[in-house]
Length: 482
Image (tube, rainbow, N blue to C red):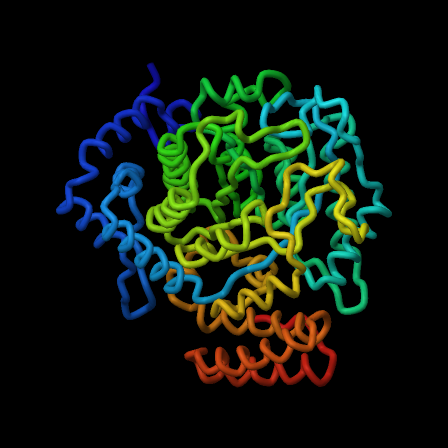
């Protein structure tokens, strides 16, 4: 039997089934131990220092105990600390992005995805480079600056060369004042050599959802195709980091397996990356199984309600305090609002999950990967965030300044977010207001910018940011950053 070892490069040793089961049993046995729960909550809190803020995070066992706890006042305390952590390290900024689906050709047999090979009534489509260009222009005309590209696994239709060509096309499109400044990539597990090619192409984060950490369930849910190989998929992030990619993004598809098992596996994966590479996941996403063509989420009997989902998000924030946390338009406006209060730092906006969906005014459903619950326009999402007291940020400065991996984490931990990310967010918001916003959103946005600018602690930074904002508004200049 495999032995648990967070520093191992073998999937079944750093995501160890026996360790997860022992963790869940321990958490269940201690879920009413108020003294221990209070100790863990106190450990999770951010501590102010002379140079900024520090957070110790939680082990997978400690975090699993909080997730098992059902005491209402303790759950409320989790939510409060989660928000405290998020504000300490990311401020009230929320980064906005959009997915771009390049191709739904796929050779895998995943039971929860409509792109599976046996689905013969879904229209198969792959964007040409001209179509990629048209999609990018449509996204730029909305105001987007950061994309996450998605493609099914198909070595014939979607080889790495196709992905690289698409990235090159995306970065080449400069339409009016529009630019895509960061391309994150969500494609199947691949080789160190291919990850190196993605790094050379200038990608931001490499994202790969585990789907489920439960090996037996994983193999049943992926009965055919290369994705069936649990170890190859689970070890992908190590190969990506070996290939030079600094920022990787984790996630499980909640609803496929029992959520407490998935949660423990997810935190263990984050611990593993920290132990081996010295830096944890740049992002963690929290998708849930949703309805799609040929897919009925009710066939999966591990669905989780909104309260449990909120608790999971809060516990992830407590356990992995420095990670960016993402909730997509899979979730409703109401659920996204709840999750904003417990640690989420990134949201997608005006997403289309169909191949070529952005160039059509009406939503296409024949090539969608999943139903989009939040169908608001980007302007509506930006306005909603501001109404909620959050700064909508289109910032990509850290990635473009080389502040990735451990360098980004050092910035985050040093408390320099207010002197760096905060003014960057305000300047990218001003770009959005000038080039894309409705009059109502523009007025609301400039009120927010005036208020938030005063929160920048460094007087020199504040003065430069003020001048840059003037230039954005009056001189049509763009792309300022600290």
